[in-house]
Image 1 (tube, helix red, strand yellow):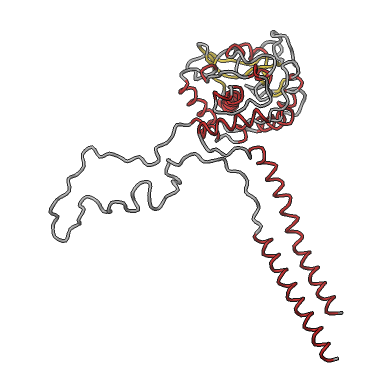
Image 2 (image 1 turned 180 degrees about the vertical axis):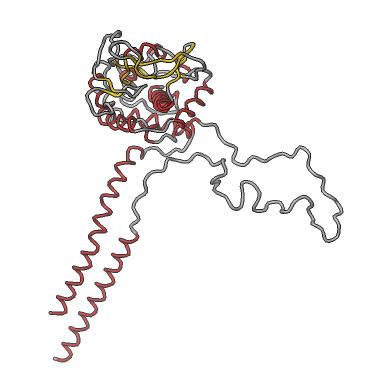
Length: 384
């Protein structure tokens, strides 16, 4: 009986040791699932296939479409003032602005701006992309008017655009424009690029972006969009500039906050905020994985090398040696500058090897204890 009690005590102690491992693994796994589950349908790693999957994801999860009239109530939530006060953080200058206005002449107050101007797309009405929380940003009235319908691009020797105070005086620099082109400040360029890419992927018809569905939106919300509708230059130049801005200005807390709030209201996310590398994976031109340099004047090989000399003068390595570019010591391409874009790195499941080892040890102890009990009982019976 005493032996049985000892065995039970041992088992209890083992379970108490294992309990933290079970408790620790549960929340970690749940956190991983919560963060990565939205992007679980994305299996492609590049090009048109990835473009189509992103379109299908953000349209099918876009369950609630806001309206342009109602969105003014949401913007203080998506873009709260950085100083913690009432009002919003202005898109181009990041200054706090307290009051909203419908009047386009009320300097020093904010209204709703289409980052992709309405005049540059017939799709931006009072619903759909024209009222998407991932699109509309709060902007100081005069700043909004000065930017107008300018396309995004690079500006040389352009005029400065300022937000205004309530008295009408210049307040904060928001960018420069010239010849119908507007260039925001460097710390906003990435924000603008990721909005443009989101709108292009979402509101192009499925067949235009290799998707299979337009999800829950009305057919009138979708059409044909080109980057040249909003970016200066050719389509190739527009893509190059978007990728440049996306890299120049990394995702900041303002974008992260509004992505979460918009997700809670609309049901979808801006994937280029969560995974900025998606931009290069979709649009960056392919890289030659192993370019072979061409020697315009190769040194002729001596057909009769001197006795005791190298059989391959002018080369200290034989063909195909480990020093050949693209082979040998660096098969993965790390640090070579030719590595292909890879899928966004998502959190890995926790390593449960320690937990499995503990369980295996507990089983062994239990089996040993059971054997001891059987042996003791057998000896007692033989003595009787």
